[in-house]
Length: 376
Image 1 (tube, helix red, strand yellow):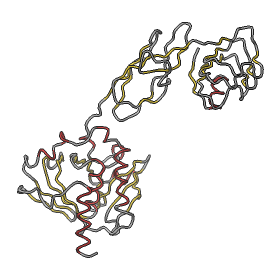
Image 2: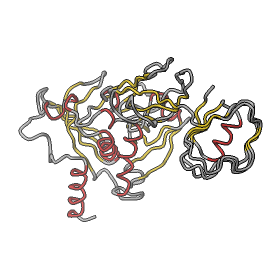
Image 3: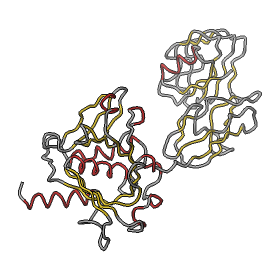
Image 4: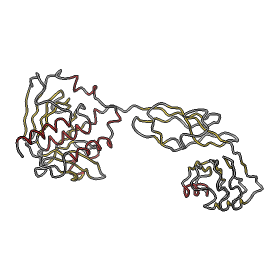
């Protein structure tokens, strides 16, 4: 590779990580300097650039720091650093970090990594953001290793970065592997435990904010207990349901006057905010009398009702019994009904089935991809 090409690639590396420094921070004299075969460390004064590197000024919210997000940002570099790309100790990367090492030094340092070290730092900065501090762990334990951690292995001669943590191994990416970039090698749990030390950014990740999802029975009783939702993570809503005499619970809404629900029990909630969810109640407008033991083929086809309550004395529902009922949204099916023809309801209807869990009602809901709410 020509000197010009090397210079251009180094400029790209520095811009990719958001680092435009060409040496130790301008105007700052290093207090001490240490060198190894593939790195150089310069200790900086305590107040040097503190406003730029203090973790309290980290530029991202807590939702930025999830393992899936860190993994995605690191893997996005694969097109810029493809498999087999030449990478040796002539390829370096320099960055200033807030550093925490319980056995050596805590403070601000300028770190120049060559070859494998440089590539690992580029990946780490892409995954976490270059303003997050580095913590050093000397007692490496496989059970504590996380995505984005840098492992120093092979008797302190090689650095790799963790892409995935598997049940008994880790998947890694590495530079200067046979003088090139390599993705996808694995290290066993035993090899991880034998690592010389580990660099991690995780201890500095701020605790993710949490929000409260509260439930209001809205005329009924027995609302579920509040739930806590973590910022950036989805929440599975409570499966518990309130009760109200003469009414059927059909879901939750963010407005107490809503006529249709926004969420079903056990549904997914993603909003990052405190919220109260109100029960939505419905009363059937067609109640099948107890004298009806069997609903014949096409018996109610084309009807204009919205909510049907079948009788617990009914045992079967025939072919197309409720076909072309374009306004039908809810059907309560008692557990006594054991035979429901697969064509009894239009498969394309926006229908919610209410009934006992494990009954024929739930089965037909799953078969036709209807929503299902357990109900007494």
